[in-house]
Length: 360
Image (tube, rainbow, N blue to C red; front, side, top):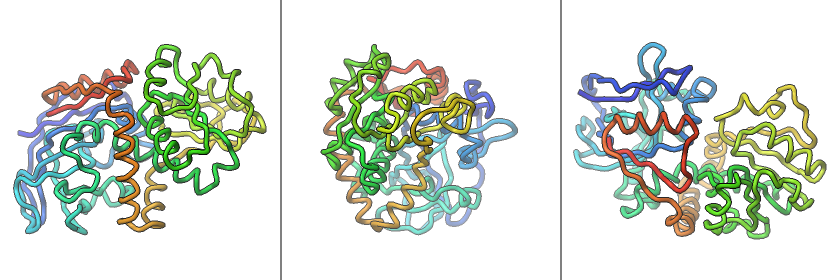
């Protein structure tokens, strides 16, 4: 019997482990046994914004429950597809569970797309899987880091690519809130490498200042209470924190010097007030929500799959070299450990120096 973690869709902190019948594998299908996945703040976004962005639709559950998507590794346990042998390993979007059935299409040595009918309305980025034997991003020694940082890093890569294409809207510096978050660290790393003339300023809680400084990714690290100390230079803000008060403070501090305001993630959309049409009015430009899958599709369309993958891989390896030692990997065994880690993540009680990996 397979297992999965079901969460209540309108209250994701309510989670339970359930047995799931594996079902018959159709012709052309492949059954994946999930080996490992990371539990990060990214998964909280998937749950909180599940209805808004369709995240519940990838791995359907019964009734009012849903299965939260994860990123991780899996191995072919059973195959009715000529191009996949038992034992092959893959990486991609998987459920918080023990197994996943896929219908591989557009198969290449590097990967495939799951053509399961219910997944086709969603962004194609989430339906792509890498075949590890020919994956330029794969490093057997860095599999935990890929699960912990990989999806969040790619969002950071896409933000930098977007900003650079727009000449950073004329800004000289970028202010990143929640600078200890993995997505912010990814953006800081890519900006350091690909937009070195842009000054990187990280905002974080007083307790995380030392951790953020230790990463070496930022030119300056400032505690949330010291926003007024930020230099009045042409700026863009990238908000990962989702705190409406902080965002308003940044807007009002910079005023006309704020050239663009970017919102990332959806964990606290309702708390952002005026940022998304709420009652609070802020100085400066209207904040714009960054939806990474749309930008990923645009990147691959503009550069072609091979060149886009090459640039991503190069930046990814630089990022891991930058931050690989800043996070301690915490490996936990069993599907119940996944449920417990996710509920803790929902509570916001997360140590930025810890990366949780589950082997279900």
